[in-house]
Image (cartoon, rainbow, N blue to C red; front, top):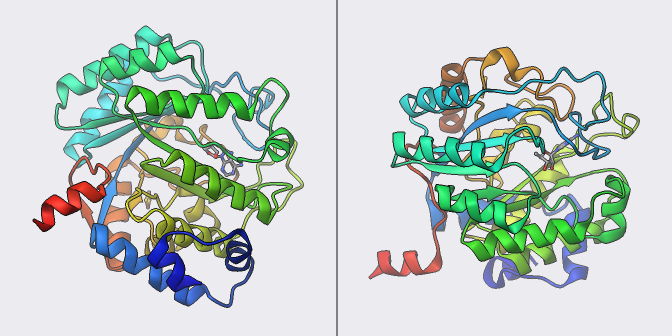
Amino acid sequence: MIDKLAKCGDLNDEELKTLIETDSYDAELRAAADAARRAVYGVDVYIRGLIEFTNYCKNDCYYCGIRCGNKNAERYRLTPERILSCADQGYDLGFRTFVLQGGEDPYYTDDMICSVVSDIKSRHGDCAVTLSIGEKPYDSYEAYWRAGADRYLLRHETAAGDHYRKLHPDSMSLENRKRCLWDLKDIGFQVGSGFMVGSPYQTTENLIADLRFLQELQPAMIGIGPFITHKDTPFREFASGTVESTLRLVSILRLMFPYALIPATTALGTIAPDGRERGLAAGANVVMPNLSPTSVRKYYLLYDNKICMGDEAAECRRCLEARVELAGYRIMVARGDAKTPDVMKRVAV
Ligand code: 5AD
Ligand code: FES
C-alpha cells in the first residue's frame, strides 16, 4: 500500500482506512514520506513569521478558544504600526514570509488590511505576505490580492457536511468555506487549507473525505494539527487528538501531495515536546515561529497549553533553528514558494 501510495499518489478508500487506523505501518510510512519530501525539497525547511494581530472573532466555533462566546478570553488588537514593526523585526531575523493571522474581526476594514499588506510589501519587496483572516466576500479577497498579498490560509476544518455542523454553529457553513477556497484560487492566491486531527465526532470516513477534498482543491499548502482541548469551550470534555495519528496523516499527505508545503504545526509541538521535529521527519517542510509581541502572545489561545508563550521572536527563531538541525534538516532564508512539477523539469533540463 505504501509503495502504491508513493508511486501513484493515491489509494482507494479501503486502503486509506487501513493506513489511517493502524500503527503497524508507521515506520515504513514515515520513511516513504521523508523520501518523497527529500526528492522534491531536499532537507530544506521554510520558515514563516506568524503575526497574530487580533484575537477578536465574530465566530463561535465550538473548538476554538478565541470564539466570541468565550467571555474569559482577554482580547487585544495590534495597530498597523505594531504589525509593521513585527515584520521589520522578523525581516532582520531572516524571515521572508509573514503570516498575518487573526480571528474574524470586522474592526479591521479591507482598506486597513490592504494598507498593511502594501506597506509590508513596499518595505520588504523580497517577501511574501500570507493572510489568514477567515471567510470574506470575493471582492475583499480580490482587494487583498491587488494590495500585494501572495498567499491565503483557510483550513476547511472538515470536508464532511454532517461533521462540519457538529463543530460549528448554524451561522457557518461548509458550503461558504469551500466557496471562499475556490474564490481564493480563482483570484490567484497560493492557497492553504487543512483540518484538525482527532476533533470531536471525527470518523476515519471524515478524514478520507478531507483527503478527497484536498485532491480536488490541490492547495499549495496543507496545514494539519491535532485538535487540542480548550477549557473554556463547549468541547472542554473532549480528549485531544494524538501525535501518532497526526503524524500518520502528515505522511499520507506528503505522499499524496509531494509538492505541497506542509507545516510541522505549533499544535503538534504542544501535544508532544518533540512533536514538530517528528512532524518534519514524517514529511513536513515548514515551521511557523511566532513573531507576535510577547506582551499579547498569551492571549492568542486557540487551545490549552500552547507553547512558546514567553519567548522573544529571536529566541523562537534560534530555538527552532536548533530543533530543525537536530532533526537533520536546514532552515532556508527565502520566500519558500511551493515547487511545482514544471519547475522541477526546468531544473532537470
Ligand atoms: N485545537 C487545535 N487546533 C485548533 N484550531 C482552532 N482551535 C483549535 C483547537 N482547539 C485550528 C483551526 C484553525 C487554526 C487557525 O487553528 O484548524 O483553522
Ligand atoms: Fe519558540 Fe522554541 S520555537 S521557543
